[in-house]
Image 1 (cartoon, rainbow, N blue to C red):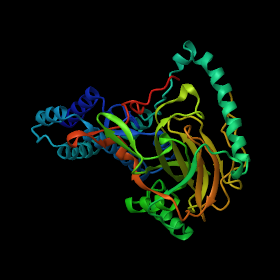
Image 2 (tube, rainbow, N blue to C red; image 1 turned 45 degrees about the vertical axis):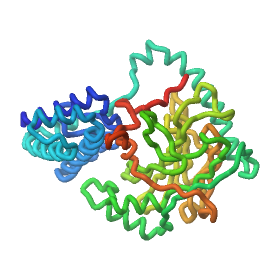
Image 3 (cartoon, rainbow, N blue to C red; image 1 turned 135 degrees about the vertical axis):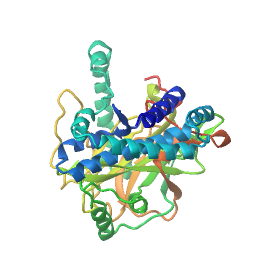
Image 4 (spheres, rainbow, N blue to C red; image 1 turned 180 degrees about the vertical axis):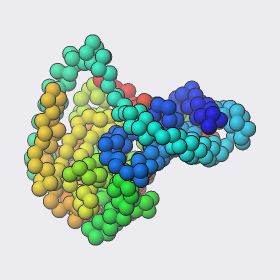
Length: 419
């Protein structure tokens, strides 16, 4: 086991030196082959059997190996050679990835022999709070929070007014253009329900669809984007590296998708996330301090275990302006958030979704959603292709090298703002 641990120590050191750590998940101290997210942390209190505990650990191992795949793929060539040389391996990323899988399995099998393995893990696996309480108390947060809250409420009032207005009353700065999935699947309640039922056949009853079924679900619920095109920064596209700069290729529109989990009536449910990118936040609609390179939206569709969307929530990719559109009969009320901003619900989920496709109207320059509707894909539309989100974490660069669009802290590179 000491050799296995040494491999992960050396790999982590190389990743740290090169700044290529995948910041999407947090490590489990003392268990270098495990990583967790908030959903996996939440499962700790649901573990009633050995089979459930084993699945929980396996999910954390899979999360770590997924993150290590992107980290190894984005390591500089010099670090790959150094790491491979330390273990007598050929300097090939595929070999390092295979070794990570091998050593991960060996370490996990060894640790699971310990009688207190799961008890130690229950204590060790903790949510990684991204905020510093100390800095909030002694820093500028108490002062900054007040004007931020005032501005946020003002913006929410404006957005709510958009959603309460008929679509024809919304002013466009340019031309409204429809973007839709190049490949689609029509919604079938029976098919989606069968996929979810089959995917929940595991000890923790978590929806874990296969790769093929994930693709089918993503095609079924992919939204229509009604974009106000007034300038080049309004054109969604593919994220690419160009001369060491992150750029958006609008001639190849892409929407990046990934899956997450939440709870509905205390049961784990599946969520499909669709991510759109633009070259900038700019133009007269956008607040001055928010303008800068790169912008986008994340659209999340939450499915109940019968395969019907019960909630859509949308936010800017910076994490701002998050709002919810629940199915009215599924959500009774909003729980107040003391000393915080309550969940923003400017509208509900259109009744005809998913029998018709979710349609999202986005304003120019400051990608905010002005209207949600249900409609068929129009005859004339610009096709976008669905791409796994993990591609953003290892984008092709010069000389077959790959680099993530994110820093080790999970912030988009070259996306600084005055704010």
